[in-house]
Image 1 (cartoon, helix red, strand yellow):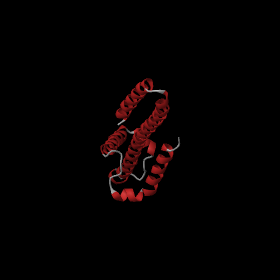
Image 2 (cartoon, rainbow, N blue to C red):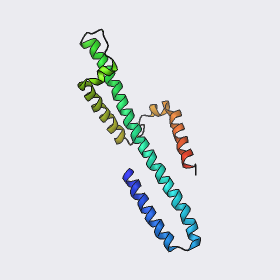
Image 3 (cartoon, helix red, strand yellow):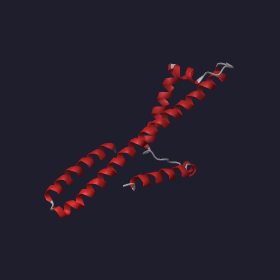
Image 4 (cartoon, one colour):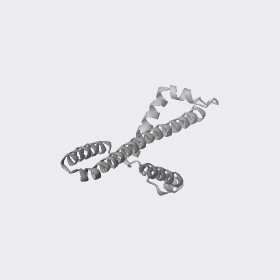
Length: 146
């Protein structure tokens, strides 16, 4: 998606430069705002795509960290019969638990990537409705800010 945006931006700039050179002055006044708004749209689209990828990666790593922390606590209480619950720093310092975190985070990120970074189950869309609405509102404000 990002590569397509970059290629599209390069093609748009090349076509618009050629059009500006070939057209008379009255058409150049119409082409220059088109170039401006097209490049602004592509920039916002690129930034939004990066935002979605970075937040998806953060959420998958954070979720994996929560799961591994819970699994380490369950392991300490039930399988090792220890009354002492390990601290979060002790869990992440252990290479075994860190490896589980990386594996679960990678699985979570690729699951979100293959789904196209959208929420599939309708019940989650219902629960996260206000946040989705706020995100769409911010998206509209950014697009209409020029």
